[in-house]
Figure 1 (tube, rainbow, N blue to C red):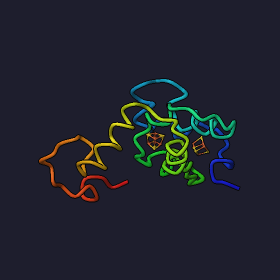
Figure 2 (figure 1 turned 90 degrees about the vertical axis):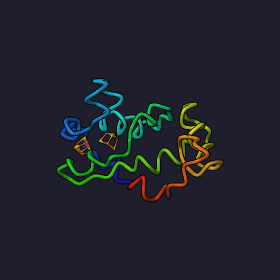
Figure 3 (figure 1 turned 30 degrees about the vertical axis):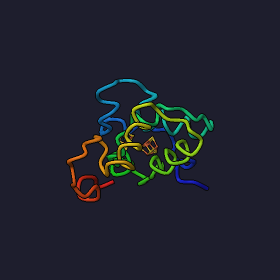
Figure 4 (figure 1 turned 180 degrees about the vertical axis):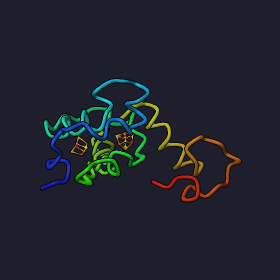
Length: 113
Ligand code: SF4
Ligand code: SF4
């Protein structure tokens, strides 16, 4: 059984989700994403999540919804936003998500997750 299937949809993690706090839309909350995953709905809404991990740390059961892995599956199915496509293109071409040819920063140092 995947971790997201164990989610009880209590919504306690919503308060610490930065995306939900800004957008105030249930679909953008961790609970909303858990519902979509349980219903096997593939949706580009998953790309609004910034993968901060706050939902896991604030979940009383420590549930990891597996959002990063889920997004990777969506990319494989070519279900993603234009902005995400562009970012992948930039990383492949320039080694950074901004498309800056002069940025020689190590992406591993810039992004922790
Ligand atoms: S990982 Fe995504 S869903 Fe979870 S708290 Fe962060 S922004 Fe919200
Ligand atoms: S991830 Fe945890 S806190 Fe969030 S809705 Fe599911 S069970 Fe509740």
